[in-house]
Length: 405
Image (tube, rainbow, N blue to C red; front, side, top):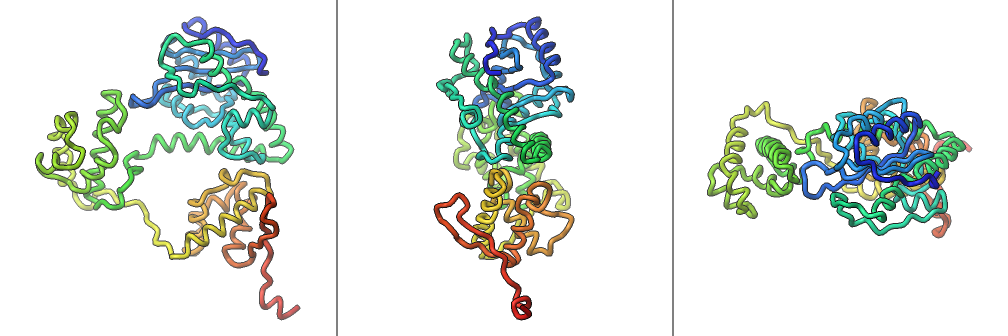
């Protein structure tokens, strides 16, 4: 697969049309992008790399222009798109086409489900599955600059040249372990996570919101929307319009005059001083919102003092289960997932919000074992500190059973 010839850049509509026809005929291709996101509101798409069994091609979006036909083939449900760490590339595709593909294979996820680490870089994954070392050297490239060198094109093509072969190798391992369905579930979850990330209110992800009043939350929401619209209009990153920490500081203080606003630390920037009246108007409008219509704080958990220790014990249990099942622990669950499980147990195990670690394939890997440790039915015991699985999980004999035996 990796021996397919690299071809010249696709830089015009007729070459793109021929490429799209080839991708449709192939019904399966590897896909990656190169983009720059530091200086603009949305990432600048600089290169698109695709590979089939027969062709390795780089598309230059800056030269081609209209890529509608290409995004149509990416999003075609009859075509399988093979990617590595697909999240950002999927997001760029959604920005450009308004859609997300239905048939995605992420080899990073597939690798985690058959015992490789997660997340695993493409270079390490290709090396560990195929024994091939990828050349580096272009990680600091500004992909907007033209012309592109032959070395840059070769580096870009390496990102897709081996993906189909890696996917085939991992699919064979998934089938041997009867885990292809697990992989399909995770691919769909990945697509939905990209959709949810873009659809949710960005302002809710601001750090420091818990220190604000509900009125302050309304100010933060309005300032965030104002900043987003201004950033999109000027095509500048959000931080260049108004930094997150300064936005939250304004929402907390809610100044009513230019003097109070401009006294805030770091507000004395020309582009902000020129917008003082706009910001004050936003704050004033937030003051007129009726109390019942103000945003609510996100749910906060009042955890007991022993939570950190319990999470540590549960994390060791999770590691033991994942290692025995040859699944990457970090794909199975995180400390946040363990906290969710513990809180669910403490709150009476409501069926309506059953934790992720008890559901689907994760439940098969570790669900009951985690519950057994959490409820004192099993105990962790160190058996060999130098072993891959250094602990054992021993059943704890019930006192009544011990008495009756």
